[in-house]
Each structure stands twice: as structure tokens, then as C-alpha cells.
Amino acid sequence: MALILALLLVSIRPATSAVLKMPKPLPDIVKSYKSVYIHAGSTGMNNTFVQVKPGDYITILAKGTIDLGKGRVHGPKVLLSYQFSEEDVERRYRGPDLITIYPGYLKNRESGNIYLSYGDRYRCPSFHQGYFLVDIIFWKMNDPNLVAKFLEEASSAKPKDNDLKEIVQEFKKGETTGQIILGVVK
Image 1 (tube, one colour):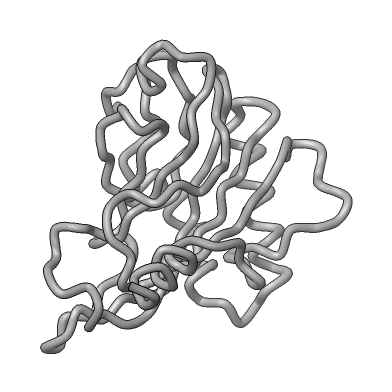
Image 2 (tube, helix red, strand yellow; image 1 turned 180 degrees about the horizontal axis):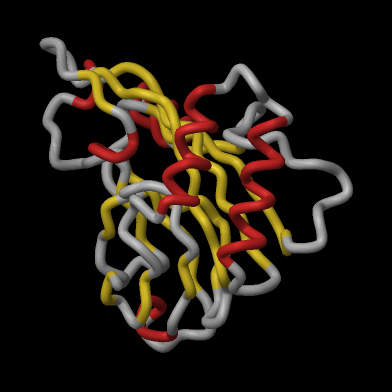
């Protein structure tokens, strides 16, 4: 019982590191920011306690790996999922996007919390190892060009971080799912 309680307490927690090095004070385009870990061994959708409201513009950035055993080591594009409320549909993380939060995501409630999972479809999570580091950035405006510029500047602050360089290039090239509008990927 103590092991189960311990796993629940560490499945999602504030990160001591981050995908980005967020400057202090926050840049003009950034409304707020939170970084969390999602650890292997956690099951189901884990509440980040990061609240979203209709009209929010967010970007989820993730890096890291989780080892499922037997040589199956995957990154967030394979395993990470998210929801914008408990009742929302599970969405697969496909890379950095500028996402607009619509009322339907929250089942027409005033707000909801972001939930993360590394794929509770897998059995024996106690054997899994690793974690994902996830940054959730709230933007003041829906401006992909300013977001790309900010991400590029953040990447230059961590010149040896190849994961971050790749994330920035994906965002700039639009290689991810594209902006999500009304629950439909465009």
C-alpha cells in the first residue's frame, strides 16, 4: 500500500529542471509557465493542476524517454497524451503546437485542469523507467511568429540542448499537427 501511495505522489510533480530556460521576469508574450515531470510507473491521466480556460493559448513542450522494457524506449511523441479536463478526449502529443482552448475541450465549463499520461495502455508500469519533462506555456496572444521567435531565443540560451533545438525546428516548420481548432486538427 505504501508503494502505491508513493507512486501516486511522484507520478506528476513540479520539475526542478525545464525544457526551456524561462527568463525572469517573463517575456512580454508569456502569460504564465509551469514545468512538470511525468514519471514512468504512473497510471492513468495525471492531474497537473494547471488550469486552462476557454480562449487560452498554450504550447506543450516535452522531452525525455520512458523504457517500457524489452528494448522499447520511446519519447513523448510516441507515449505522451494530454487532456484539458477530466471529461475531455485524450489527445496524443505530436510535438509543439500553438493550441487555442475552446469551450468544448472543457465540456462547456468555465475551466479545467491539464492532465498528462505516458500511456496507461501499457501493462506492468512498475517495470517502466524514465520520465518526461513537460513545459506548459500560456501565451498572451495567438501569434505563431512571436512564439517561434521566443522559442528560438530560448534555444540559443541552451546551445548544447539538441532536444530543444529539434523542438524549435518542428514548431517553425509546422511539422507537428498544426494548430488545433474546434477539436479538429488543421
